[in-house]
Image (cartoon, rainbow, N blue to C red):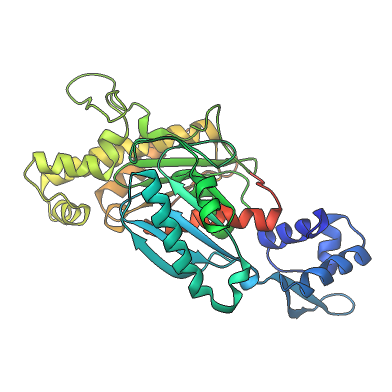
Length: 379
């Protein structure tokens, strides 16, 4: 059983990287004797490891780090079909991966997921007793306790307590989160922006998702809807205002998503894939250029609005490589730059990141990892 002091050490090393006992003592304002005792406990339990010597003033000290194999987690992404399940270590590295069809019947879905979790557990081998929990990311609204899917249009679910159902079948604690929020929590724990107090994340897929870390905490909103820029209007009226699946017209998703681009290309008799359409635009096809420029510009305007409202240090945009390197990406950056008020001090940096199928599953795994590292949900 870990104490608050143990969790302080774990969270500090996870967010700040390896530290010596002396550095931990200074960072946590705790005596070296107390730190040494707590560190000894974590070393004995195989959660920490000692690394290289750190040389400075006085005697060299030993740096400490969290062991990657101290705990294992399963992340499940129901963001798309097929469902992706990954097994990760405490550093977020994926060690095993399985897929299965996305089922909408809740009983069948939970049974299939539990069976696949069991198969993943076997890959851990002798250390399967260190499998600590499951995280599930899905496209919908989730309760604050991260147990219940309140509403998911893609699955047709309403008020489904999938967290408790999975925990009962697998014997592992299970947490559930909206896909975009899981994605940014994975970035905050495992990614390059680990520990950054203010940043936003956007993904462009068949739909568009967004989430924010503000003052070191996940921005939730009144009902969990903070970050839903996909249904922010970008076209108010006229023939360009296309109907959205949410029931409104002119939403960002109807212009800037992969589905919107594909629909526009089909109406023009052009290839529907982002890669093929970008290639056409690069070779001077004006219809392809217009489709991608309109979509990228809309996404850029939405990004500028996000920056104006939240002033994040970074905005990470995950999208297909062909989009980021072509007309879409250039239009996005141009519109975001043109419509952002330049403030004194450091400007918001926009980073493009490849959209990878395992990203949501890794983010889901981070839900369970947070409880191991912090002892509670810290965001």
